[in-house]
Length: 78
Image 1: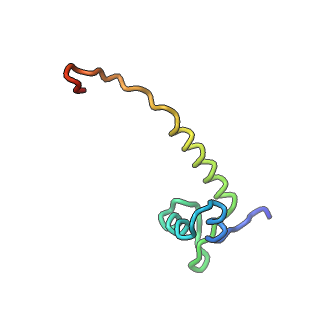
Image 2: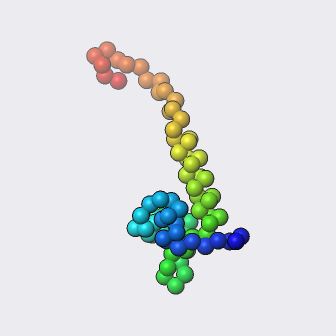
Image 3: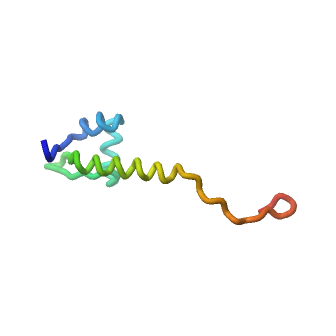
């Protein structure tokens, strides 16, 4: 199916989290979603894009931060 639509339960299974977590993330606009007559729905394509961005963001944050150019002062203070 080209434009697959998931329910909260299906997204919870896909992400391996509790349904309550999916509801909370949807309400906080942390997941791409929309409502149909008051029920959350999720497009597979949107979730795939979101998951890819989460993986890319996690990889970027895992890189070591550049060292600051501060020098230590006498007495251990900076």
